[in-house]
Image (cartoon, rainbow, N blue to C red; front, side, top):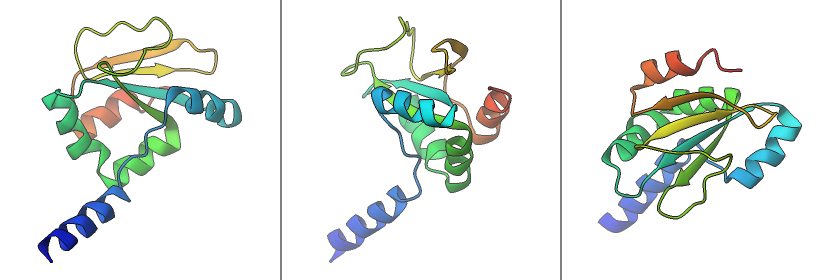
Length: 124
């Protein structure tokens, strides 16, 4: 019974989490929407990456805000190839890519909701 409740709770929480796309799909979406692609480069064992997911990307309001402004992509250094010659010195690092496939902003490190919103609100 406890396992069923736990599975339902985790499933319900995932309904509100930010939906990340792969880079190939994001490029197709960008052609239609014109939105900037937000690439979140992480590592599987990165504590700060998991913290950012839990405290920022799982927040309902912040997820909606990000999805209105950007096309979110998550790439794992342990498994994924990085596009555009991206070099990462530590994780997480966020790259914002315009429709010309130019990186318009890079934001290293983990942030809280308000700081991340402040750092990204003027990206176009």
